[in-house]
Length: 113
Length: 114
Image 1: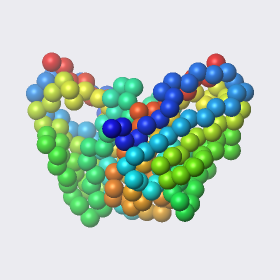
Image 2 (image 1 turned 90 degrees about the vertical axis):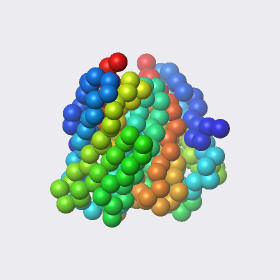
Image 3 (image 1 turned 60 degrees about the vertical axis):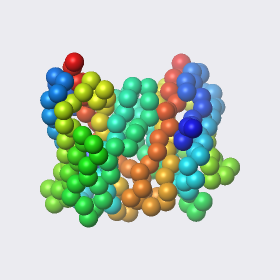
Image 4 (image 1 turned 45 degrees about the vertical axis):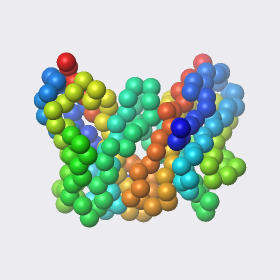
């Protein structure tokens, strides 16, 4: 009964390609997030999204775009991949109130050749 | 802008020892302070969440405290076990953070030696 699932777990691709990472949650949450964990293990928010608003961290390049077909899914599309995009990307979800814990997926390790 | 700092970056202790992990944050206007555990190759598991109006939370051998006035939180682990070995992250949600986005520290990597 995986609560937050991401696919693929590993993604190896070349610079310049376009790729997507999928995320699904079965917890009935109304808010989903994407975080990036860099090579120094620092976790940083990229996006948060519920059915009312998309909030984008100002440091995220516009090559990254989240797409939500429904409340249970928030996919991450990345265009024109660069070497610096290599990282682990985590999806998370929560109820849309601050004092509910966020539940994380196991991450997608993206490696750019 | 909220900044979260965790000290030490790494800690190694013998099994059975009690230990304290430290977290400090620059903006005391927060909804809550959360502690997570991350195992290698895995996502984050929420351990404890302390709301802004609370001073501490306990779960089993774990106790987390929050002092907003000093911008500090501690995670106390009693009678440590090898299975506690992991990276521990603290995070906060500052007021005004859109959709309650978490700001993380860089974590403390804990090794419990049998």
